[in-house]
Length: 228
Image (cartoon, rainbow, N blue to C red):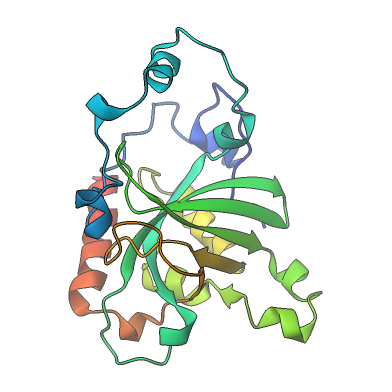
């Protein structure tokens, strides 16, 4: 499983993916995704005027530097939707929550992602997901496998995309992602809760037939706009 990328400053994305004959041009910026829901208008909303002087000084580069190596490894961004496992047998055409996965690879069998509800500065951290290869999944005991979902359906249907990555890199990336498995926990339902209430929720794969037609169209259009 090679889909999550190593951090190598200065290398183009195509080189990180190991693709040959790819362009040396800088990748185009991905389209922004804005946070929405109860969290965006509540006490957890971003207010640049109300943040601490220490944090503002860190951003300005007048303090530190601090070692941020773990978060600087989160090179790969995946754009998709999530739903709770307990809702997996729900009604068809159910609307699911938008999720942005910021991922780093530990090795070829294991990657880890943090999940946000958007890509702008005010985005909220909504959960985590761990991703393993099919080979590693096969070693799990049956009692553990119940927590892991396959990614093949989401990839094949276009429910998940990698914004800003041109073909053929995107095609190769999705081909590798489709054989992986994920274990994801949502810690905050930002659509309904102004703060992270309650217990974490185990997330599950999305059956394309259960998505609203408008959602499927939105994801196809998003991918098409990214590569124009």
